[in-house]
Length: 130
Picture (cartoon, rainbow, N blue to C red):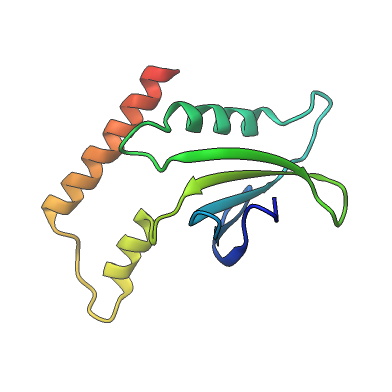
């Protein structure tokens, strides 16, 4: 993994792992710790990867480029890296920048409508694929 990508900076963190900006091709690496159960890879991780792969051709969902499974060199526990196309921001950061920036302002109704349309389209695609 380290021979393909160089981590530049951490850009986020969530319940299941950390997200890094990385080089190689400029990508976002989502590093996930896998808590293996008796059956192997947790079903939640499999569902996430499966759904992201199905949605990878959608214009409304960030594209999953590939998945890498590696053993953590520090403790031998498995890690799952999800490699995504990189964007400078996400919806939460965009909204927060308007609400908490130097000149707080609400989002325009047309922008909110555009975001809702895109979210609904992505959700529709996901439901149709299930």
